[in-house]
Image 1 (cartoon, rainbow, N blue to C red):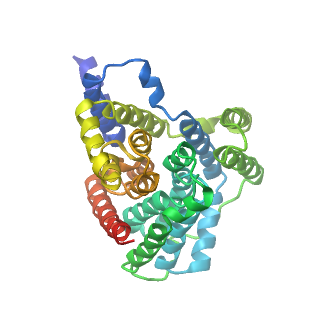
Image 2: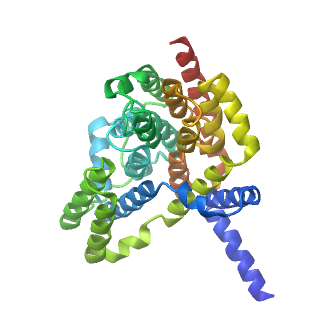
Image 3: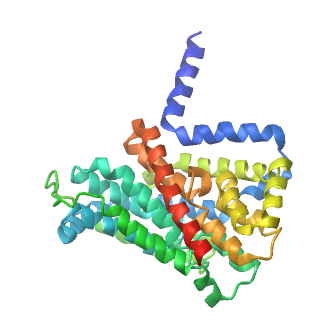
Length: 374
């Protein structure tokens, strides 16, 4: 009896701590009744994405330990001085950094800094709003580049889209998002920021240099300059030598969440009713089909799935990028933000989800109108 109680308590504790992963597991198990496990499951996973995600999580865990985020936080507060200005900096930093690296890597890099900035100045109540706006910035910032989002990289290669043409397809939408982000932050009260304490942080210079070099390797891996398995080996070996304890701080639950959602999305795409429904829509309207599909199976699986049904790559490209907005599973990168937020404010899950859906849906509606009009 005691054993059962302990198991029950352990399960409840896990569910409370890992809400997103728990929901994902339940949803995925349901799909398994329709799509039994077979060899095709192995094809669901974006292995390069998982490797890059693990490497970035390990490197960021190391950078956190060097106190560099605290230093950057103090510099930002001293430079921009007001709440609105600092939040603008964090959001647009995420937006433009996403043009250089993928959206999930941009979030992993900026979210810890955002928390430190807001928490150290007593502005925790703005955490949800800022995180949500950063998620939109991360999902939308890289949509004009072939490498800014994983679905872009796939479609760029699959359709062999001319590079100059690619940059122009989503230019109007990208400018629109940049303007909407600016307008959205005007609702933030613009008060002067000050640190809650003047605690001094000692920068661990040697470790900072090591992790900065590893960070460069991860970026080069994302750009396919360095093979992802080579980067993985370099990161693992270096962290083992420098500070093996850093592996303990890698968010393995986030990695597991991505794996589970890959299975969920892959299974949904193989369920005949859903597959036929989306195929019928894509025959009529690629743009609508892509946006609708993203709400069910997220953006990357949608890009892969719908590319088999249409040659209209321009509408498909637009749909899988603006379709990243909407509900939380429209983009797997959004799960990174949710996970990070729940680390700091675990009791506000419903509030966050409501605000996330409201803001994302508003952005999506505006972008649909802009797309139709242009």
